[in-house]
Length: 239
Image (cartoon, rainbow, N blue to C red; front, side, top):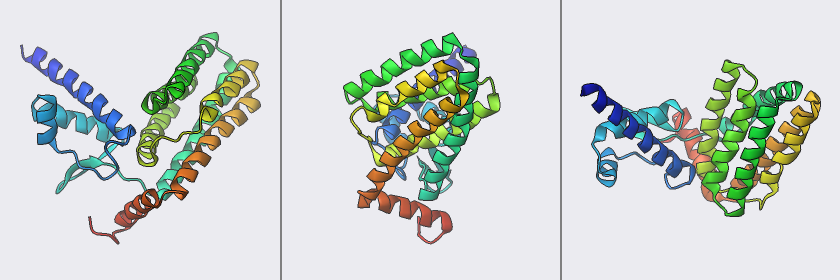
């Protein structure tokens, strides 16, 4: 009985984490927003225990931070951290793309084709959360195919921070430019040319990075949030 109860609570925690993750990536919960357990408990009609477990799960993913005085809140990134995330992604994913092209695994290529279609479908319907999740799944498949567990862990850490970036800048809408930039990457991997695959991966990541920068530079509110996050890290702004 106890095992069943614990199992149900764990399942609820995962479901709550999924819902909160969607809200963070969708921009409903902005960086710095507190997680009010009592309010969420009432909204979801469950006890606070699975909510707290979900919060710990999202903390481990890098989406939430914990302060003894304020509790859980959506993590805030500095502009320096944002640039570091993209720099790390390029390092990780260039290598992963190179390995994927060397192996030319038909199963991986089929998976990438399916996930590319999911990205296009979400882009067509302006489903930004769905597009982001399909994109993460696409890139995860490439890094996972490397067979390097440490490389995959590094990617997952960077992807969690990328979700925070998406929550801050909102939906980076470039029509279907970014969505379609996956196609030449798939072609490069299928060609078996590791140098070309690595270059196409970097082109794809930099395209998205340029759009993120454009959003930040044209929004005083977003730029201010980055400034505040940076100041809090250095202790120059009161929490």
